[in-house]
Structures are given as structure tokens and as C-alpha cells.
Amino acid sequence: MAFQLVRLDDDSLYEHIFERYVELERHTATLKQDLGIQQRDASTLEIDIEPPEPSDEVVRMKKSGRRRRKGDRAAEDEGPRTYDERYSVVVEQSLSDLNSSVSNNNSTTGYVLWSSTPFFLRWLLYSAEAQPFRNGNVAVEVEGASEDTIIVPGMYTGAQGDVGILELGTGISPLLASVLCNHVSGYVCTDQRGILNKLKQNLRENVSQITRRRCVSASLDIENESEGTISEELEEPSRTRRKLTVRLEVQELDWEKFSADVPHPYLDQLATECETVYILAMDVIYNEYLIGPFLRTLSALRDLFGKKQTRVRCLVGVHLRSQDIATRFLEQAVVEYELPVHSIRGAAVDQSRYALYLVN
Ligand SMILES: C[S@@+](CC[C@H](N)C(=O)[O-])C[C@H]1O[C@@H](n2cnc3c(N)ncnc32)[C@H](O)[C@@H]1O
Image (cartoon, rainbow, N blue to C red; front, top):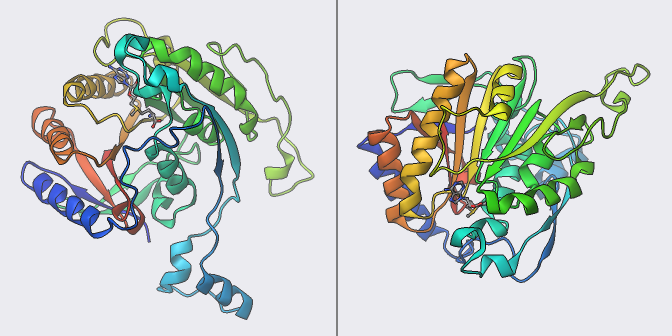
């Protein structure tokens, strides 16, 4: 079943936070209690992104040849497999920079991979809940708003046009970019200046994961790489066509310095080339001091794309640690910045340590 949305206002946000932290308590035995670093004792990680194994019940049904019926929950929860996508992404992290008091002006969380990013990626690619993001233009049930449903644009380039992604606070993680570049027309990774070299190194290392599109990049100095055809993806394999292109760029975007008044060529390019831009930000809400600059930047970016007639949506993933920080983020987003924030609800998200918010 697809995810549902709950529109948060200055009242319901407290109810939402209360419920989420009660749920965390309930699942405390199965949830990791650490800070959220994916692996803090290795410099090189190999992250496999693969479809989950089908549940025993689904395997039994398949073996017995039983056909899937509407309302057949076990089968529905597996979701239709549009692609059997698999990736193996290598992430070089820097534990010495993480623990340094001088690197990147003492803002060092970006030197390692955080667990909300692989969680979100697997959910997006494989969960039945995330289908509206994969298929696009789906009416999703929404609670607490004047409308019963809202149309959620797809996060993949498709019938509704080209989609671009702007990732905020990417850190050194090549994970989202090297996988999602297979599905979008443009992707811009951003973070503070001191993080970008390692991020670029990681992206170059994983460009081979981008097999469905031809990747070009000025900032990474990649041109016409993996030129070829994609006959294997066409319904008629004998016909071949040139690969579609994805433009992957990296730029500094510091929330404490961001100004929409100075030129941002890669953002302009996204706006010009894409009908829809999704702003993704994973695990960037962890420090009270950064909430204001982050939200100010998010609002300015929404305006910047809006002025260029580009549809813009934001998806923020929060690792639920301090209840105060999560509450403060929602208070400022909803009350101060008046953003249309929706909590994404579904079993897989609700049973996790993460909260996903769609600013629609
Ligand atoms: C907890 S890390 C998450 C990194 C990455 N998204 C992940 O999931 O692995 C928080 C990220 O926010 C970035 N960040 C912190 N302050 C920032 C600022 N003022 N402007 C831009 N990025 C910032 C950090 O550099 C870091 O990459």
C-alpha cells in the first residue's frame, strides 16, 4: 500500500512527534540505538543496494501458482518489481577528519556515511509504500488538509517530464547520486567546501553504477562517459537507441552563506532542463543552530525554482535522536517558514528510526 501523508500544522506537529517517539519506544528492541553512523570502524564501505528477499508467504504463493488478488496484503506489501535493480557502491570515508577539530572548520559530520541515506534509498527503490515517488502523478491520501488527496510528482524522469534532484548536505556520500542518476535527468550534490573533494572522489569511483544513462559532468570532468546503447531496456530488444543523458554536478552550498542573488549555474541548469526538481536532504537536522540556516536556504531554493516555473518538492529525512531538535525543526518549518510540511506515513517508515517529510 502506498504511503499516506499527514499535513502538519502548529497543533498536529506535536501530536505527530509524540506518536513517533512512542513508536520508537515500542520498537526499541529492534532499532539500533547508536548515533547513526553507518559504520564507524572502516574507511572503505561497500554498500549493496538490492531488492529485499520476498517473504516466505509470497514465495509459497508463487510456488503454488496462486494469483495475486486485490487486498492480498502479504503480496501487496512486496510491491510490483518494475526493475530488479542492484547496485554496489563504494564509499571512502575519513575517520580522521570526522574526529578532527580543525577539518572543515570543525563541521565534520559529512566525512562519514549516515544510516538514513541507505535506508531512504532502499525504501525509495523497492518498497511498495514508495510507489508514488517511482510512478509519479499519483493521488496520495492526505490527512489534516483541506483536500483528501494530493498529487505527488514522480521522482524519476518519465511521462510527466524531466526530473532533477538537488541534494543538500550530501557529505562524502555518493550513494543517492550514483543510484538515482539512473532515473533522473540532472543531479546536483552540495555541501560545505571542505567536504567536496572527497565527495567528488567517491562519485568518480562509482560512476560505473550509472548504467541506464550517459553521465556528463563539468565539475567531475566526465564527458561522454559510458557512451552506448540501452537495447536491453527496450521492450523490443532488437531496436536500440542512444542512451539518455544525466548531468551530475557538485557545488558548494553552505546554508549559512547561501544567497539566491548570486549566480548558481548548476541550479539554473536544473531549472531549465527539468520540469520538476526534488530537493533531497538526509540527516541534516541534528544541531539546533543549523535548523534556521537550513530552512532559510530551503525556502530560498523553493522561491528560486518557483520563479523559473519549475515545480519543486522537498523531501527531508530526519534521524530521530533528540525529541527537542525534531520538534524545533517542525515548529520552525511550519510556523516560522510556513512551509507545507507533510509527514510520510507507512509501516516501513513508522517502524524505523527515521521520519520522512515531504514539503509539497
Ligand atoms: C549527518 S551528516 C549527513 C550526510 C549525508 N547526507 C549522509 O546521510 O551520509 C550532515 C551533513 O550536513 C552538512 N552540513 C552541516 N552544516 C552545513 C551547512 N552550513 N551547509 C551545508 N551543509 C552543511 C554536513 O557537512 C554533513 O554532510
